[in-house]
Image (cartoon, rainbow, N blue to C red; front, side, top):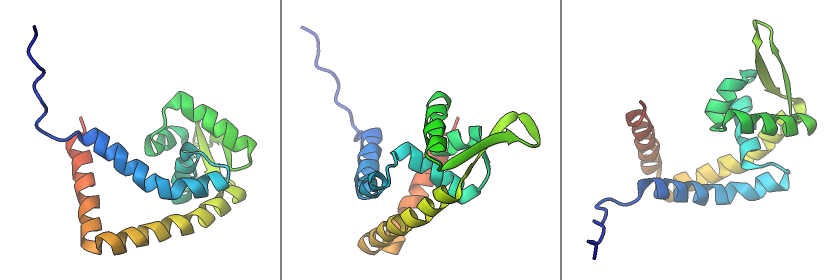
Length: 146
């Protein structure tokens, strides 16, 4: 008979982070779905809403979408009139993306709902605890970088 596996000492941090993400997104998804957006499409629009014209590699990194998946997401968003793609005028090997007026209106509309949720979180947790959470997450991300 084999020995029982050694129990873990620490809680499952990746699972807790996913659970926290899902809890937060539970407030956002209904608004996204109401506007016909997937989580990935929203992440792309958020990046474009924050940065304007962005090279596709940067969109992939900041929206945490793998390149092959991003291609499909951008194709659907372009079809729906939310974004436009073009060759980078400074480097024809690269493609840049920007939100259309329709996409930017959607960012503006959804940001009201999302920011209201952040205000609620700040009131519920307290400004200091929310700032600590952001700081801890930033520190953890930095710590785990190769």
